[in-house]
Image (cartoon, rainbow, N blue to C red):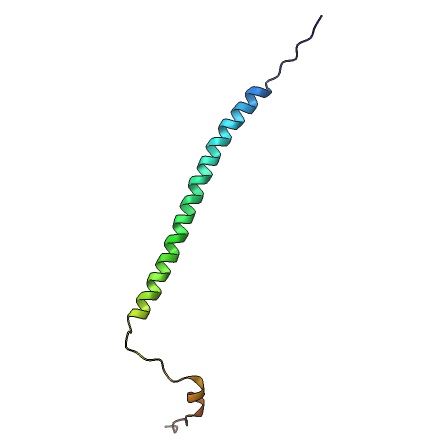
Length: 77
């Protein structure tokens, strides 16, 4: 009498692969959103820094440290 082995493994694997595809899709969307937010933050920081530099176009930098060190301190009041 021949024996036949049956298993639920093919159905379990099929269900698992279906859920795996959905999970990978959601992770891809989440990662893309995270990269978009990171790019937005970097763009905002660059914009703020450029705005700060452009706000004072003709201003020259103050004296350097050697010049400050050699200048005489003002008399106390």
